Amino acid sequence: MKYRYKIIFVLILIALDGAALEENLDQYKEGLTNENSTVRAQAAMALGELNDAESVDSLLLALKDENSSVRSESAKALGWIGDDRASDQLIQALNDPDWDVRSSSALALGHIKNPNAVDPLIQLLSDENSLVRASAAGALGKIGNEEAVDPLIQALSDEDPRVRYEAAKALGDIKDSRSVDALVKSLNDSDDSVRYWAIIALGNINDSRAAEYLIQTSIEDEDDYIRNAASIVLNEKGWS
Image (cartoon, rainbow, N blue to C red; front, side, top):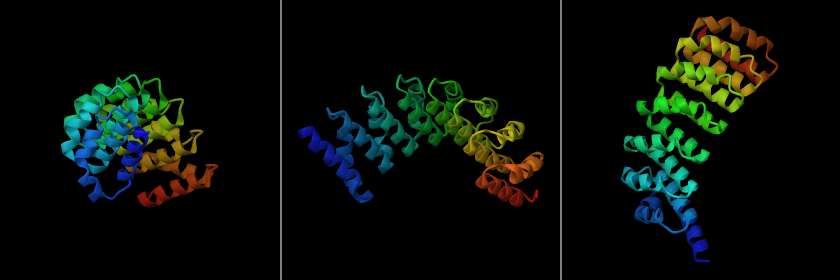
């Protein structure tokens, strides 16, 4: 029963406003070493919400916790804080046996934007878990390194649409004209989310070679939302 009350207590504290969270900073740090894994995970979450750089060292220790949920929440928290001191250990965590930890670590590295994470994240585009691949693609887009363009173009052919649309978003963030042809092909993807983000990406890249294909999409796509998105990009770019 005492564990139950501890868990409830931590959850209540997490629901409080920022001032209350700050008052309990030391308690959350202590919570990272609690014998109950749920308490440790919730403590990591709270420290991430505090966005306090002083918590980084404690969260890095928690990133090696025996419980995968604690490791995952610690990785997320380190990403929210965005301190580059966490980059090396988060890169190591990309090899964690638990897919959720790998995914959370990839997302965190995307927030931190350390260029040393680019190659490991590119390798993660081949992960056996599709959510990990999607997280890696999104992180590469946030970092914005052009070395990721060709691997992300390949990811546009992934079997999972979540990976394909994250790859399309990422290519739009990087804004490299090498990806135009591949994104044009994605305008015919079977998944409407992929088609939508291909449209947005082509607009971000701002290469007029995409104009005629966006015009075709604005007329012929089966989805009203997709046609409207293409029309909006065409009007914004003056291509219509």
